[in-house]
Length: 212
Image 1: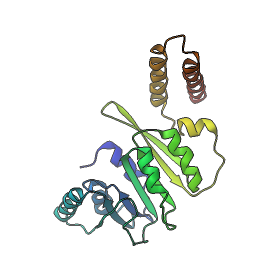
Image 2 (image 1 turned 180 degrees about the vertical axis):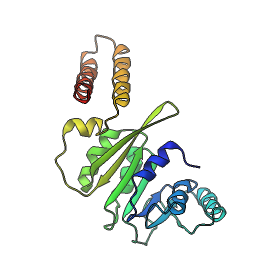
Image 3 (image 1 turned 135 degrees about the horizontal axis):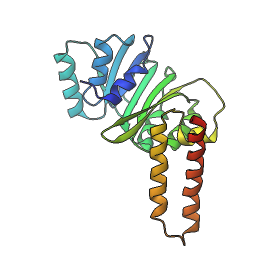
Image 4 (image 1 turned 90 degrees about the horizontal axis):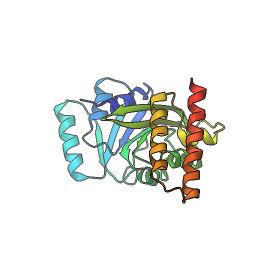
């Protein structure tokens, strides 16, 4: 039922977590967490009425009990039972728009953003959430960083905020290749643009050297 990305997210959930899956889609992850008894309790929410209908039907078909909310992020959820939120499959700006309304009871996020991962890591610091773990998943020839944030304060380095804390060398080689491809398409007269990507290449090479 679950793809590799959702299974990886599930692996970051602990037995004491009370989880809400924000943007639950068809509730496959929530159902899996419930059936496998991975966490203490699980809730689900989505902004789409059609999605909620399908989610509720899937929950019924799997003979489990999961409360599902029709809500834009946390806005229409009065329940404060959960302590862990999962957000997957959205862009960083949408995710941060949800995070800014984080209830006080949330002390853990598991997030997989579609873009702007540096901005996500950096902006989450403003809400006192720090990356504790980061796992890279490759699915359909695309890499997905999955980040575990908790309210455990720590010193963050610029380089790990920018590129993440994964030990996946294939991912960093992919980032390096991508930077070279971009650089090769920038005319030499555009010195400033080329400089930015040359700096990125130097930084990624340094990371790879440290991981060898």
